[in-house]
Length: 118
Image (cartoon, rainbow, N blue to C red; front, side, top):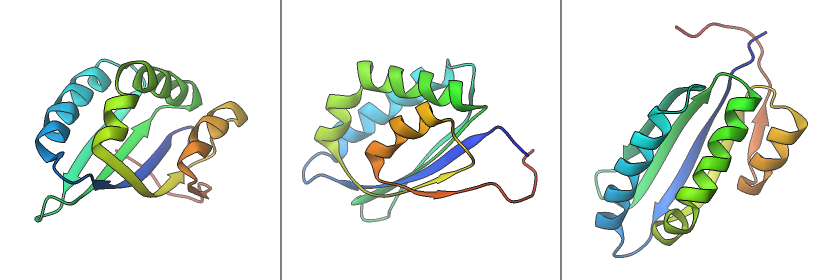
């Protein structure tokens, strides 16, 4: 079984906030790249600029908690001003503490079954 925890977060870009969102995303990518447990952090924008998907992957639950702490203290308020979360799916088996932090997204949880990641 893998200790990695990943998720896909789907967002609506708030009206008139696309330029602010682009700047914020750039800052968030730079900050997350510095987190030792962050294995993947990819943002995708629809052609019409109205929706975003984020694919995130972390080494373990401790890395998830570190990321959520960093996100909240540095970006949470601006993030919510730019985006409205619409759906989330968490993959893996986060610890109780990590799951409690992720529950704010109201995600579907899918437990690891089998496979590999390179």
